[in-house]
Image (cartoon, rainbow, N blue to C red; front, side, top):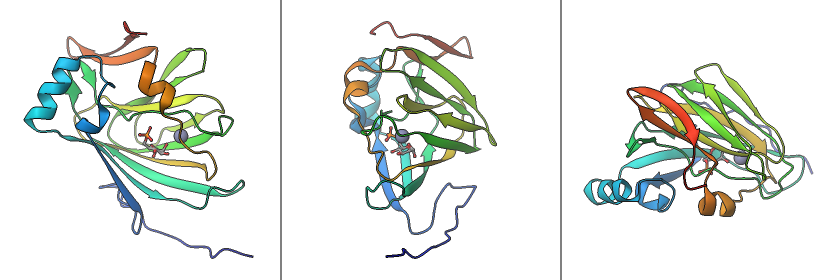
Length: 187
Ligand code: M6P
Ligand code: ZN
């Protein structure tokens, strides 16, 4: 009837949550996600870097319960585009989420199903509210790991399909040493 409460330790330096389930996404797991496909292929063949790691504490997919996870998003670029997470809508689209930035520098791209996109900058201490129905992807715009905590309903689920096919309507690139958010030419 009652679940057992617990506390776990999150290491602010490494982003690791003890006893969490670890997921690793390498660049080769992200085929078709970056704009510059040649640069993607070259980097995959050269070193296939880890783009991000997720440390998740998840419950059964039931209404009312909560999951939480840290993400360690490494610095890097594919062509001019900064490394990012795959990004997703929630399978239960009306589920919201909270992100809390812990280390490094980056931001979040959010997008409605109609394709209206927003970029919110994140630095340690920034809390981002992801409202129901908005797809979300984080981007590392710095040169150290960008680490954040996410808290989301246990029954939210991940819907990667639409973003995998079309991406976001905006991209985050480096131009003349600056971080620029611009329209996705492939959108
Ligand atoms: C956050 C949460 C997770 C998500 C992870 C990586 O930690 O939103 O639910 O899995 O980021 O993002 P993605 O699933 O889009 O690769
Ligand atoms: Zn989410």
